[in-house]
Length: 545
Image (cartoon, rainbow, N blue to C red; front, side, top):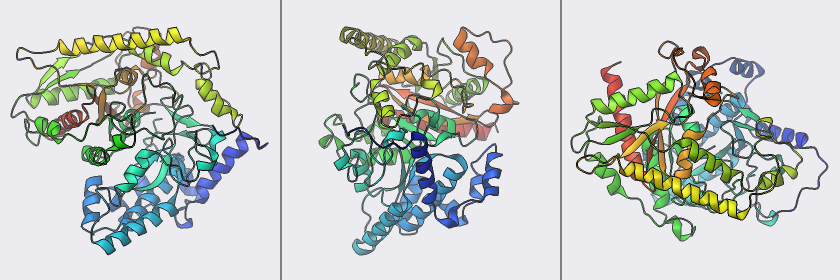
């Protein structure tokens, strides 16, 4: 590991200089006035018309398009890579100024890359790959040449977390290199929580990033809270080699690389493109499963464009609640909307009552705590920064758990996986068809109020199971449609804490997304079923406006 920093500069000063350097990299013509920033602070919703008011019409026209449409226009040369990169860089620059959401913004590098891609197309008469000219943002765990990777730790400013000093400038994560080979353009790295192990985005470098709908880890939570799409694959489906992480030696339940997009087609494009590079040849941990178009077509061939069953109806499970914490009224309504749409489309809805998620959460959290927080404190020690107040109790430095206790936890996890598999298999109908996928909350609330994210079992249980999961947007919280349910009696203290945090006026307008869960390595099938459900939802909305 790189040696500890010996500078006497305070962590506060380092963080201040980093914040200033991000803003200093924004071109003058994209810098907002004090009045603009004050207006942003008073906005309930920073998306849509508000952020668009700072952008050129050309930029709005580009960023509003589906990723697949952008790629098609680039390949037809109706758009240049420079036009597209400029539009996304401008949008990112504005977004950061009004919502403090980036750790890195490397505009010059992005525009230089775009010019290279345009020159390549001009010279060779063809694109560099299926993602030619498509801008892709990266979570600040992914290493990019000549760009910091702090992962939210002040002590790694000026370096790359976990990378030897002599390799800092040139080192890249494998998936970054793979995406670059496909023609992608990188332009920014998004903020994340200190330790990665928090449901909200806050750290000592840039402070708190609010949900853009002003309601305020992984790809499911931000997708659900921002009204977009994501796919969390089973670990080892996409390359994790060279990616920064918390406690990377804990690989019993590995982290995974996921994708977010403004469309399901965008998820499919990115996932398929990466797998077509055969990443298992460079990352030995990746399972050699190529992109399986047949898995998607098997589902799609059974439905029409509106998701209506034309062949074998899908069997869709619905987890209405997890026996520990009840979803808020907007999430309840979102689940009912899906159940109604799926039934109207001719598919079968099955109430999902699996092994208790509380067991899965307990086991999964125990693995996160297994090293006694030594990895986290190693990174904190580089600068002397403190743990965030909301993390101090959970990640207080202590002894790592003994080996035999760790092995017992492993067995408990395997037992839970087996029980869940047995339950899933028990859902077979008379013809032997088990549930195809399960719809469940991502969280027990819509886009969360800062400091009110009390329950993470809805996502942690799926992490323990290593299942595939896609997120789709369903609706938005509505103070008229989602009043407080005064008849509900909380089951326990955590349930009460979450339930009493619901305020229809504050949550109004907050996005509600759900996760569509498939079994291990069923990413293609899960994406296809997510598409069927989303189409059925859209069709239902057209019939019942």
